[in-house]
Length: 373
Image 1: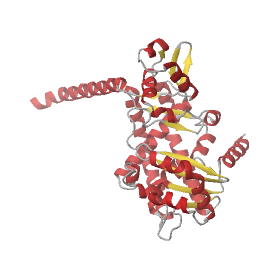
Image 2: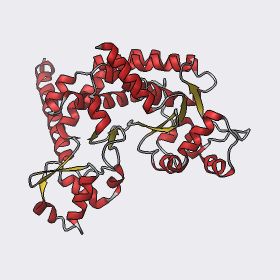
Image 3: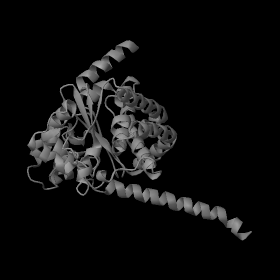
Image 4: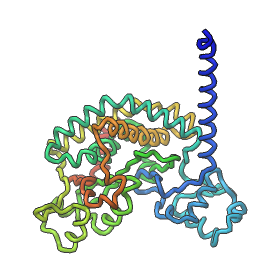
């Protein structure tokens, strides 16, 4: 009897303790210094100049501008050439001057808002999990001889695809096409989701290459794709003999097979494989669009509905990747965590699509949009 009388009190104490911890966690986040070079998300190539984030002085300035800061306040940081730095960050679309105050051009989600966003993302992921199990199974059957590319195709070609998923999100009205094309969507969520992933797209003529990346697999991939991205696409599409310089550059990344040929998963627009990826990408976009509570997020985060959706889409997608990894349905490739040690596995993060480009995508979007009117 005594235990039963005290049980509600114990529960109340635990609830109070939990709320106190959440409040402490939120306050700690609000005061923590953010490294914007780790985890910054930019959707579309017309957004902020992310190379500026790798400068520690720039990072310090951006941290002080999260809530807005005036020039006299920023001068107290005693950084050299503060005015020039502010001009550079403004030109790089990272800062915006409003009167006498400098503010970030992108939202930073942290503290109690981060806790709210995580809860919403976890709920969305749970709703999406049955559909994702089915999608991964279909991809496994399609990639019978190329299962090393399963994660990349699931993430970058189905869940985060410019040509399938994002095109569908645009058509369904979740994303503003004018913003996506002109400036893109940028944001930072702190702390960063440990299963955060992204996709970079490269083009050569009417062909596209998708490259999966994460915090642990950015520097080395960029070092390769910068000078050789177009050459990789050209050789993947044409199956041309590799130049010695290109072969030497690709070898450490695992892109050269035992027969000294380029090892990149390549498929063609209009092929059965393309049609399957398109179907699954559109399915994913449609279902996650229904699962996300955009209005609740927009109200809580004080952002537009399209901004809120883009942030929630990414966070929920990464939570889905976490659940699939935990269930061992879609293990996260070690190369995404430690690329330096797993450099020869980088080829697993790349695919090439023959016959598609941003120009053809735009024409396709305009055509589909006109048919809906």
